[in-house]
Length: 451
Image (cartoon, rainbow, N blue to C red; front, top):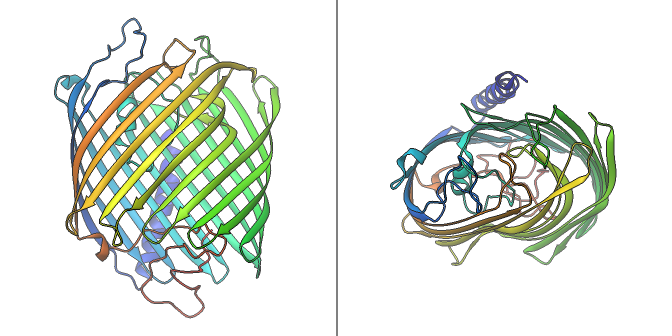
């Protein structure tokens, strides 16, 4: 697989399109500098396994420093919103300087109002990081409850996605989305390479406070350099997961909305011609306001974990969000916590090993001035696994506490707001920052056409 060839082409195309759209829009791009610094302590610097492995890093506690400068380029017009962000992060461990790592992250996200009844959300990202640093470097409120390899190892990950929503009739909406992800190890890291494109297609009928619809999804993955759950090397593993669900959404009052879906999926290993049918289901309850949002969600499904290069059938419950505690939002609480019970599948699509992940990541922030935010964060990550051979997931526990500060110039109020797609049926929670509406464009800020 040619990593650079497929990741650079979509990113370049998206970026060129963004520049051309921005030049023709009424919004002038704005540049923001960001500086973040944190000091903290962890009881497991390299996410060492609970049972030491020969040649592996021992469990070591120590203090660390995180320095993370970044820059944001954003623009907003009546028909488009763009946000491009680059972040460099250096993680210095004082007691074990050879474990210090750095990461680079480039992210792009855009919204396009294609017509009064059609909208496009698209984006791309490229991340170079380290496996044991990836947990800490993920912002609180944005992390996922996923199993991860123990120990050290560098990787490069890239992704691109798009979602188009079209109003087919006053109360009928259709949508399609695609995404592609590839992850590969760097330097002398021994780990699998994963390539995973996905697609989905759906239609939805809207009523006053309810919406019902159907959705189909297809997920393909190709993994090279993986191991079976017993630790034996495997040939390239490929599979496809086809899912069909019926869905129902409902708005509960002004601030709450829910989504439920139920159906089935077929998982088929194309290299061994083995597979199975399984029920599929998700349910979520979301609290959403102009200043924040939170979601409690449950899911039963199967997915390919790019870091592990393994497919898991899992049940997961997760709570994530960012909620202001004061009227003006000066004090904010963020969280990304949950529990995932996963079962690794072998090359014949049979259940072969258990992997459980527990994440409790909670932070509090105080906006001292428009430019300065102070924060406190605690993170607990625990993995319980049947496997004993790296880079398969191993059992380990890691606790970390951090105190930090974030400086932004100019302040957020002077920057175009990032686009937030609506979660509610009435779409009143959509955030679209626009300069001036143009004739024929959709309504901005409230009731827009975001998917």
